[in-house]
Image 1: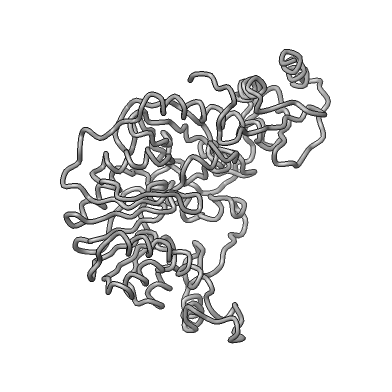
Image 2: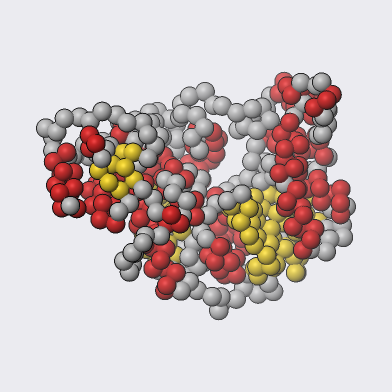
Length: 437
């Protein structure tokens, strides 16, 4: 049966095969053209061609032993891309700490351009189109007019009751949303740490919710770093907390003086161009025995276990991903001891304490975990290839045949009517009978 399916697939790939009708179902792909064609969707974006860092070792622990597990990021699914290099990150699984990292990654001015075009880079709007986003949460630079507008909206306060009759256009609903969404982190920190007027730095604060709560409950002396200028403006206007922006994801620095008892970091390990240097900077600014709290960190389970497309999940800012054991190892390799960690809303969070010295004998990933994850990545990559839209399928033509053959063989794909390929991600990312990888 499998042999007949393979023969049918090859027949459909012949140049004289009739073009199948397009199917818009998300779980169904179409067979690609038989010969790769050049990408024609590049436009004059203004994105700098360099620098693109090419890594020969893990940027988290320094190990040089790794297995390539993926080639593309989310740009491969965009109709328009900055240039042909933008789609290729060549992800690798570190054999020691277990972090998966992009071996080709944007840096310097190239990374800055992506950040300046944040909404386009993560796919909220098309490249070159009018950027979407509210004035309270977008990458737009502020003008005197928008500053005055934010000041007027913020003057209504944080908790504006529905019964007040005030239109949502007359205040900033995101302020209350931020406070409520971040209350879980305040609960964890307040339960696990003894805080008495601590000095706190919040990195990549959305709208100051964590800092404001720690200031109110523990008389914390807080400072904040934000991604965008509108966030900085609102945090200072609403809470009176010193805030600075932007954040340098390539050569991370802390633009405040002195040491901190607690540093709170949102989604930074995932995005940092040089994560080892980022963690070293954080560690150097913590007092002895101080704590680092990381949260909203992207984990691989979304595409390894939950059936989502690997390409769609790895947006161009996702330079690192991991599982929980890898996060523990990564922090230990950089001088932190995990105190508590869990998953919240599908993302990793963890509280770690600064160690006096960076250990050399931290626990490495086992051979069994390495083999299991390599197999899962192979499976996830193949299924992502088969789910690339028909109009963009030429971009993955060189991987298509192998992905199709393996997926038909292991039962995660089938050829249905009119040559469609339907994918069936296995539950939990595990095949019923998985070969030893």
